[in-house]
Image (tube, rainbow, N blue to C red; front, side, top):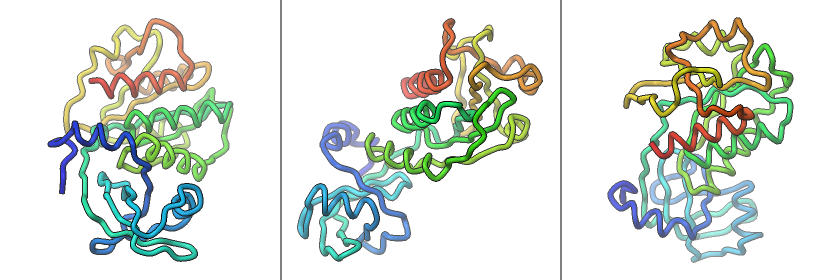
Length: 244
């Protein structure tokens, strides 16, 4: 096994030129992996790979496998694992709590860019001022998976839902809320390793007065002096964390 941390230069330089595919952990048996579905079709129909070709596959659990296609069937293929690369999930203890948005394209942009920057945990909640109430979790998961592969990350994002902010803050974690008028800036936020955090972002029009009362003022931060759209604030926060 090769650790990405121990050989970071190789991983960063080499993996930038590969196509990354995904297969569930249970499809890895011994030193082989089976791939079907959309990834199978992309490998065989779009990329035109065949027996003997090299591909890279992640199990979504922090590992990327350099593999060689050993057989191709009508609906799936099998590949033999040659090398295994392990990666650390830098943000395993951070959950982005994001509100539903009126514009689905902006919401999907928010998911996509956060995943590209390394965020792996999401909690989508209904807010007093949220105008979209439809769950599209199947589509969100598909977008998150595509973003994981595109950005060559190895942790499959997890997306859950909550009915209200009140339900969100009941969790026994450190609650951090981002609000434009807060006195403290994210630059002063210290992340304690091993501690679990919920980062809460407001919807279009901001959180309601009663919702703001749910979070202690000492845990409220701003991202910038300017007013940002929700999707921009989320992406900015992910970028700040990625560079901490």
